[in-house]
Length: 393
Image 1 (tube, rainbow, N blue to C red):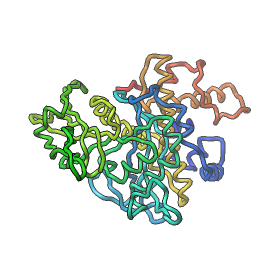
Image 2 (cartoon, one colour):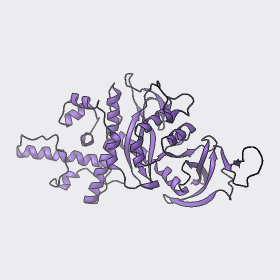
Image 3 (cartoon, rainbow, N blue to C red):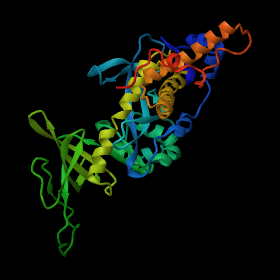
Image 4 (cartoon, one colour):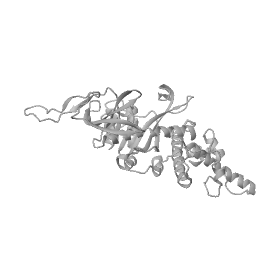
């Protein structure tokens, strides 16, 4: 991880060999090995537990040319707002509500899967197409189920994960889901009146919810402040028709310019407060900054190989390097009071071995492994260690 953070320019097996102490073929061979990235990154989690901590999952699109890269296909690119040819990564990250930070856990690449054999119990509700995006997400969650449950039982995603197939599969794996519904989603009031005698199924529903005309006897009004702006929340337990279950719905009224808009958030855990659901969903966007830092600083889009295992190792290494950089930033902040971005931490970790190289050259030392000397020691003058470094905005 430190080696990746010291490389300027493209990150590849060749550049790692130039800056490290191993040859290119050794890096290629080691990238073929299996590694538990979730366990590795679990040692750098944000402090906190309970409903304040959650797990965000989101896809990231990678531009890729050529024809031999595994998983190359047409995927949705949020940046371009259209479907493009390239690669797609599904990443998981731990975050806390109201905290402007997140920690990467692991990532899996979208690849064609074989669906032979017995259907897993968490996919039995899917009548067909058990190899789609939802099924692949649930398979990845199942593979790391115990580790994820040890962190949090709340999964947070965008509208893509607000489906019956995903919510039901996640529930069978022991997770609750927080996400956003479409503006035209059909919600139904629950009937809480007296039960009528006689044959037939008892009445369960009591009309359809109109998000612009909510019933005051059902929805509870609450006000929260976020980023200096006030948001009004209307919450109630209703039935989501598309999800086929009771959910805790939060209709958030936000100001957009001169007009007010309403968005529908939901949680399958009906015991979470409305403000908790709102803050958790709002904070999930921190996973996007992990992707941004990895693409800009740790070579997330640079890896090239025709082997899917090596690519998977590279993607996870780049995202894990962002975790390491943020941990180093926290330690530098504790020692010096300076808050550094990932790019600035990369500059510091580049200056440290450069100083060691120059000192060894001046002193005429010929022994010792200079390439491996990347430690931040107190003997390095601060004006040289922080040369070209600026504080985070």
